[in-house]
Length: 222
Image (cartoon, rainbow, N blue to C red; front, side, top):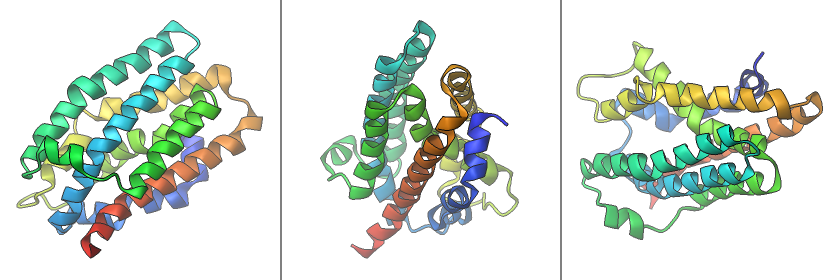
């Protein structure tokens, strides 16, 4: 098995919790309260900025030009394209960029983004990409499932555009490339002695993604 497949298989329980979370199921059915989704969108703006920082760190941690270019290209894509698209998408929900810039960062957002950065600082580039994997690859996994599922509500679902974004042809190659990058790095950096540590990182990062979904639902209580 490829390294990513092994990591996912070893942590299938938390991966299931993440990809089938109540928040995701609400997106699928169209019944997720809009307040929860809007709070998630605002926090995701801040998340994307930290995501760009993580890939900048990956460029620093790279020890060859190919990995450095791949990481730096992702930073550019996040800052110049993803952030713009996110702002445009949020505008459709009545959320301005000024509002997203002013929002207080949620503890769940801090937890995952700082965890990723800490793993990147203390470990090598493989540790960093494994910590990033639940987000990058997980969204592709979720998008694929929701697109293909007959249980997904399509007509009148306010979240159809989000589902199509992550399940469509534009994002799927991003998710696949992230898994392939982990496997490429593993060719020179992975040993069996590292698996337990990498699996722990993957598991903890996936749990933090579960917390990110829950953050949206918890916003309903405030």
